[in-house]
Length: 90
Image 1 (spheres, rainbow, N blue to C red):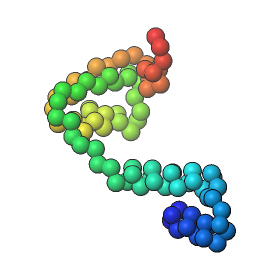
Image 2 (cartoon, rainbow, N blue to C red):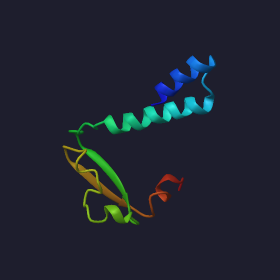
Image 3 (cartoon, helix red, strand yellow):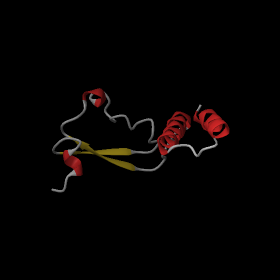
Image 4 (cartoon, one colour):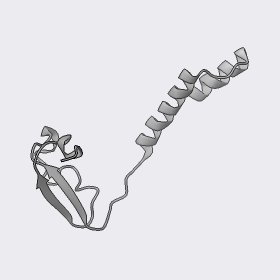
């Protein structure tokens, strides 16, 4: 869609596309790449550090959503805190 807009804009106005529309074109490309990407299965040993305070959408899954991405063994270690607390320096 953005390629069509860019082509029409350049053709009729003979100007460079504004940065705001270039950013939308990049966003559009990123959205399409996300739709097209299929993550490969990792066949080795994976270690997951799981926080004690979990997001409700993963509470029912013992592998917390990682099972379909790991074909080998998945070791899970529980650590104190929540998701964002794990990212902070102790």
